[in-house]
Image 1: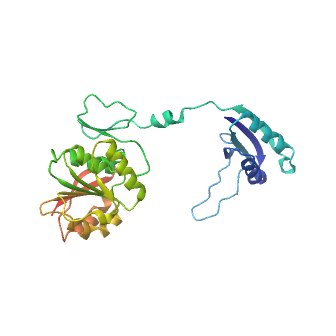
Image 2 (image 1 turned 90 degrees about the vertical axis):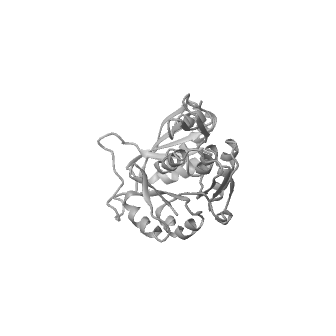
Image 3 (image 1 turned 120 degrees about the vertical axis):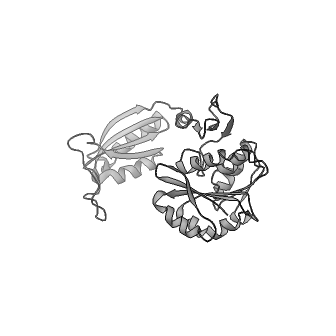
Length: 294
């Protein structure tokens, strides 16, 4: 991989970028050539107002090429064009190889839910104190255990003890993390539903990776009553779903709602009041977990 850096005036940036792309640059980026100096220029105006200018007076255009030969050829071809007048080649240098997979993986560490329950990416060893371990890698669907709403739902499940014999519904399952957690904690009758096809695929894959069977599909898959219903979505859909979610509860069964901010608690409590009384069961970083029993 080789990096070709060019200096050009503002009125040549678009033409130069398009030419680099036509010359098979793998990527093209533009930055202020005077950044971190007294000549640095801000391009942001007041909200609702147009920016004070279209671009920087002097821009640094950086293009990546697969080989040095491709970068040299692009440099020679550009130098011969009329529009390159006023532009300058700053540097042509090899780009240090990176193990991008390992670099990305290093950003994700095991996540403790309780002292004994951990979410561990597949490339990590489980901590010695972990008794319940969920293997989960970052993916296309929401839910890796790092967001407060997900952690609170998992903590709630972990505090229920043995879930053997429980029928559990994860409504808006995302990665399937809540249904899988219920399975690891003993539940065997698990269903996850989501309107996003990527979530259905992700839940299926993650459940298999953890040796848990989850029936997963579109919302119409959910039928009948459940011992536990969890929905980690957002306030607006949770309000609309109130009759449906409550209808899926057995008598005496708990409903767990997440994806809510502290200021939204009273509104949700009022919406669900015809079916059950919601209370704040957990809170973290401005997010709350509501639960109630039908």
